[in-house]
Structures are given as structure tokens and as C-alpha cells.
Length: 321
Ligand SMILES: [Zn+2]
Image 1 (spheres, rainbow, N blue to C red):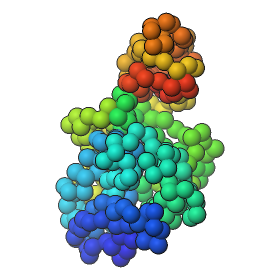
Image 2 (image 1 turned 30 degrees about the horizontal axis):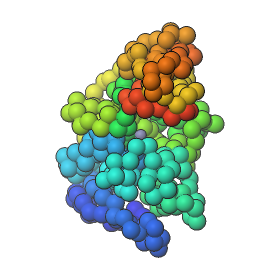
Image 3 (image 1 turned 120 degrees about the vertical axis):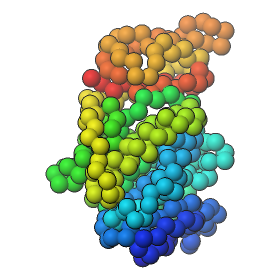
Image 4 (image 1 turned 180 degrees about the vertical axis):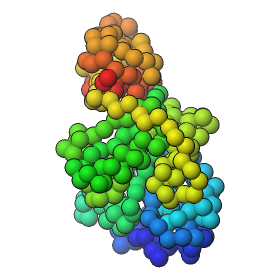
């Protein structure tokens, strides 16, 4: 069996290697790593991806660890793991974007066959790999300059049977918080959202950040994905019963009205009330420029840890409660 350019091994085997998208010179400069696990028994195909943001290391590390430790004997179906989607950005330590074109790869789906590097990558990945799978789990963290409270993200499609499968996955990961996108979602073009619109049961999980490979953050992803795989029947073993996450009412991203130095007054996971002072901006000699206040009450889900902020630069996000 092949999934796009990737040869899946025979039943009961694991294969590792690299693949590329031949026929596109710009993409074919790179080799992407993969780990494929073919279960002894036939069943659905699960795609586990990470590193679409190249410096979100806990997701990358967890994807590799799952690929090396899940036994094919315990699998009913196929697990395809792509641990590093933003291959151009990894050794460049790119934050948010892909150095080939400066775009955020997780905003470009479904992509275009004749577009920019990122649009062509998104097109090939979606058409040749993602849509061949039944489930998709995309692992993230706070980026190199972000601290983060763990959460999951999923999107409703309006198709009840699919939405039920998606909700089941998100509930099984074991996060305390969930962000739910609507069928007409803000921030379109994400891998998970476009996969869901193409009938693939999809979610994002976020754990860790700041470029740190903290074991607890990696282990949270490994445990969470393992529980999702057990819940959907792809991996043997009884799923652990975990509390479903609290779904926040909205996901508010705060941006700075000015360029300057950001001083945060809050921490991730902190609960804030509407109009609370969350931080302030000063210029390069310390003159106050702006106060950052909470537009809604809720939980702080991520904070930019770098104080160097451009005008309209991202500062932090609140999950509204
Ligand atoms: Zn990310």
C-alpha cells in the first residue's frame, strides 16, 4: 500500500524513512521524515503530524517517540507519523513561518498547485496524504517565544457523525481546556480545519513551548495521543477515563497597538477578569506607550515571552470563560 509518495510496510511491520514531492522542483529540494506502522489487523488510517511550526519541539519529539514505541502488534489499522512538516524551518529555527516564503504554513490549506512554496506544499500534503487518512492529529506547542497552557483545538463541520468523532478525540486527549472553531471559523487555512472539512476527523493538541524539550510536556502529548488512539479503537488497551476539557467561548488574540518593549503582568493558566491589566508597552527609553487590558474574562492560554514586539505584534491569548 502507498499513501501518496510514502510506501506503507506489510502488516505487522514498522518502516522509517524520508519522502519528497517529486515533480515540483522547489519541494523536491527537501526530504521529509516519516514513520509508518502497519497493524497486524486492518483498520482505519491515522495521520499524526508535528512541526508545521518548526520550533514547537515537544510535538516533534512526541511524534517521533510514538513512532518508535507503538508496537505494530497493538495496532488495528495504520499509523502514519510525519514528525516535521516545516522541514525548511527546522535548522533555521524559524518562528511561526517557513523560510522559503515567510508564510505561516498552518494558514495556507487547501493550498494551490501553482502557488507559493507553502501553498504548493499544503496542496500536495492535503491531496496526496491527509485526505487518504481517516483521522488526523496535529501536534503543536507554544512557539520558540511563547509560553503556553496545554489545550486542544477542534472545529465543527456541521456533519453530526463526523463532529461526534472529532469531539470524541478532543475529549480523550486529557487537556483541561479546548478551543472550538465554528464551521465558518476565524483563522482559516489550518491543517486540522481543512482536513475536517474534507471529512477527516481532526484535532490539534498544544503542550509545552519556549523551545524547551521539557519531559512533562512531551509526555503529555504522548499520553494524550495514546489515549486518543485507544478511544478510536486503533490501539489495543483500555482508554483511560479523563475529564473532558472545558470549551472556551472564544479565543481572543491580543496584539500590540505600538512597537516597543512588552512587560507581561500575568502567567499562563492565570484566570483574568474583563479590563484587568495584563501588561504594558514602553518605548526603548522606558516611556510608557500603552496598557494591555483584558477584553474578556477567561484563562491565559499563551503569552509571548520575547519583549521585542512590532506594531500589531502578538502578545497573548485568552480563552474566554
Ligand atoms: Zn503551532
